[in-house]
Image (cartoon, rainbow, N blue to C red):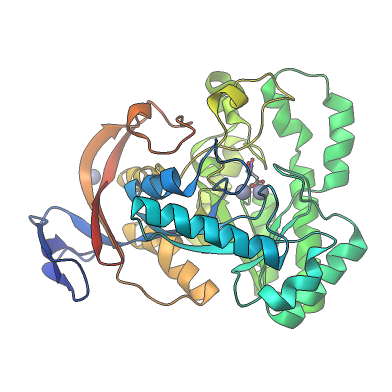
Length: 405
Ligand code: NCD
Ligand code: ZN
Ligand code: ZN
Ligand code: ZN
């Protein structure tokens, strides 16, 4: 049995926590460490198979544990992409082998990618995947589905099979037109102009209309604009089954950060201005935002330092998710209850997951700088490096095993 003595609960009381099937060990939390449920990160891109030089499940699982994350949903934009039964099985085999090699039984679920061929296999894979991922506009990897006919078919099929559709909502035709217009600009901040708010708003509207038409459960991934928050709020009121995810970098970075991050700041959808940031925080407060994901999308520093147009979009995040949120708690931007709801409870409910006995013990008063040398992610950098954050995970408890963060 795993015994955690004198652990602080959310309500401030102190008690012992016993995990029956856990390893034989006792930890004393000294009334100081607080127990939160282990986090679920519902949006990550571990690069297996195909781009293991950026990240694999051996490095990623260590990074997750270090961040207090005990379950993740992984995206399908791999090489080969996860778009048929064969690739799905192959991907699972590789992941399981890598996790067992490092002895970290990280819980994971996989998204199935939508392309013109993959829809035939939906019926076959629906019980094995967490949802269907549609890239309405192109991002990293070649998966994109923007034709009206294909989108209608995908939403209809998913509705029939009762599989959740998660969308990367950016309008491909708007992106293409803007790229022609601004394509020669070298200032990385042009990214936020090319991948305009109109592109995001237009695709989000279209996805919601399709979800309404076919009764499909819909998730808007990495929502960025205040308009989208309003649109999603209205749709929810009208009974559309739409959920809203916000990414950590869109909460804690904005277009001003191009100045010091340069091409490291590139991400899809792009960083927006401060007022959008604030609208996302308001969306959290009002309950429009259902959960927070990191969109952990590692690329190597060498790749990220290439000039604009050659540098890929995406940034790592799984290790900084919880410290950023705990720091925001100290700044009175969010309550601890909200953090728990947005990183675990709501995700469990929406995806119908079983409760687990996974926890993270945090030291709310620990102040520490985000340091590259401590990161476990293979890509070895963070857009938040140098920030001093207050509130850090100390132990992660996963499937009855204790890990030092
Ligand atoms: C992601 C990636 O690199 O896989 N990049 C990103 O900028 N967010 C893909 C995605 O989520 O769109
Ligand atoms: Zn995306
Ligand atoms: Zn993503
Ligand atoms: Zn405090």
